[in-house]
Length: 180
Image 1 (cartoon, one colour):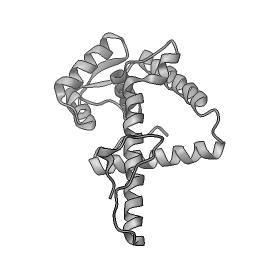
Image 2 (cartoon, helix red, strand yellow):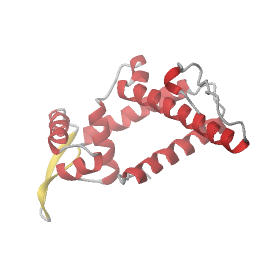
Image 3 (cartoon, rainbow, N blue to C red):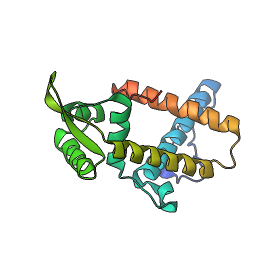
Image 4 (tube, helix red, strand yellow):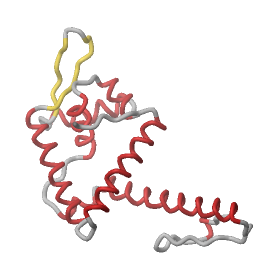
């Protein structure tokens, strides 16, 4: 059995407490160790993403909420505040505050649609340019981060991280559109 609370994470090495030595139990323990390792790495990747750490080595940094709003609206099309709140799993007031800031920065605009009584939001031309600039900067960051990875490792990671995200979206019942 894995006793993660009694150990410190060090180079993804977890210590195991005494337990059964039959192959089924060892396989289950090994599966748990692997999942614990993944869980820990997800904590780290989330930390880096939330703190936007790769961006500390570049000049332009887009606000995280603006980036997420722009990415969603650019890939899906105009949406209402309520649709965005549902898509993000956030309350309407939070999304409204984020939209207000993005609108003030000329990244998103509000439009009226005759078929929809609620106002719709979409990226402005400046917002699309800012999104493309940010994504290019992030791509450049990744080139530097993965400089010592083989092309095959990068392709495998891209496939697996997309599979992870798609599985997470299915589990949460919150699909995210991907650009074509």
